[in-house]
Amino acid sequence: MFKDLAKAIESFASVWAQVEQRKLDLLQQQLDITKNPNPAKPRDAMPHGIWMLCNRESEQWAREDAMTQAHEMYDELNDWEKVAERLSLK
Image 1 (cartoon, rainbow, N blue to C red):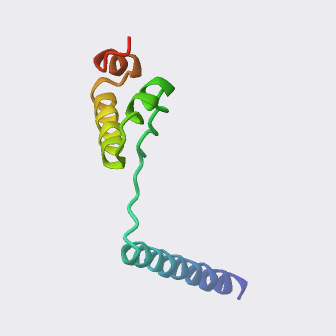
Image 2: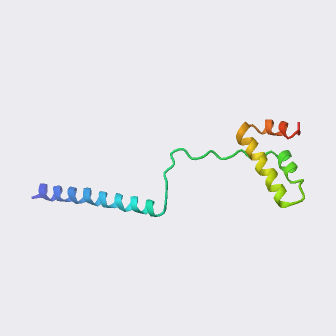
Image 3: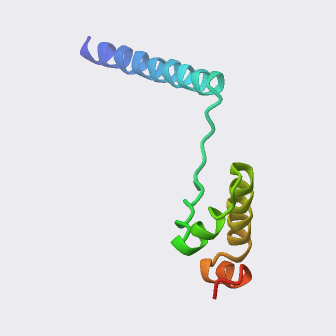
């Protein structure tokens, strides 16, 4: 009798786990949640000298463009020192 009860509980738990997993999959799909095993590495902080150079521009759009250009150079070179050299700060 107890063995039958244990088997029934085990079967119910297995089905329950499958239902819960399916609910989780549907929720992730509805919320467009993607699993990223390798999240992007955060960028290193921009050195103060480069930041000051970018903020010398008088217009906001020009400052944003300068910041974007500096970050693009950093993405290419992976070294703020090289970015500073390219911007003639060194």
